[in-house]
Image 1 (cartoon, rainbow over the protein chains, first blue to last red):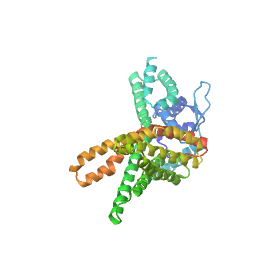
Image 2 (cartoon, rainbow over the protein chains, first blue to last red; image 1 turned 90 degrees about the vertical axis):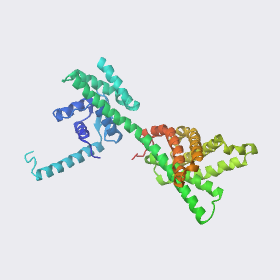
Image 3 (cartoon, each protein chain N blue to C red; image 1 turned 180 degrees about the vertical axis):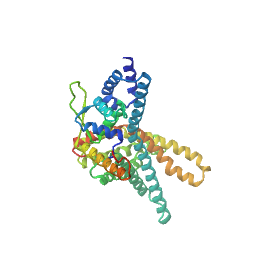
Image 4 (cartoon, each protein chain N blue to C red; image 1 turned 135 degrees about the horizontal axis):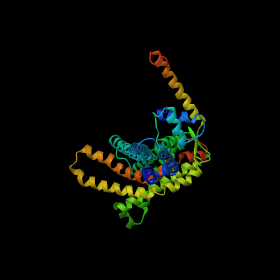
Length: 102
Length: 281
């Protein structure tokens, strides 16, 4: 599975540990310095698909009784695979003389 | 408070199952967002509206997808079955002679069974371990169902012999065929060791018999229409009406009436699979 950009950000946020929905949205906003802003509909639509395909599982509600989500082993595998793909892409970009100092 | 009520109404755009599972959390997040928003009211609501419309459309589409594919599968299965039947029938007639009525019934039954089995398999394939075997009981069910129902009508008292010309009688035949196919499917599930889903399957298929009866009435309507008009039709169009229109009329109604229970089974496949200890693909 190749995650889309938004899906990748959600998986990256969950790499930090279990998160509830609002926290995932905050993470993404901070990670992208506000460039990517998720709405609740998009977020839960993606989380539902992740849950059905076994990338994410629900965990016990936190003190505010909000449901948490965490990565499964399969989910971690997908993030790692995507990160490797991005790394290979970046290597190619540098070889072609773009973003030499990035 | 007013904004909360508006968002709550917007949540109705999502399918009920999605709303039930995530609606409360989405509402909480919305409250949080509207409390901490840094932009103006219009920009905020534009963001919320775009988010709701896009994600609700996606969820609705995903909900409909299996139902639409079921309908298409039913139609495709019926067309393939009819094409095979007419092809074999004509080939046999051209090379050997008229096909005996018993052989015609068996062939028709086998092809209907194959079509039904194929359509079911297309949707439920990921619940089955021994996939190719799925078609066997369906074909066997069709082979038994067709000659049996026609034999019952032949052996019936003389008064009821007039019945085959009546739409209701045709529909009863179709109903009996539906029952026999249901039994074949049930047997298949039990044979595969799926006793737990066999019960669910029976409940879901309670709709099969009325669906087949309805479908047959639709078939007769289309058939009557084509009969009264096709004298003026060119030969290819007559053949097309035989091979495509009639089976599609049956398939679409069976498909439409069984789509919802199948969607229920499809949407709970992960739960069913986890209870039965095998992995859905």
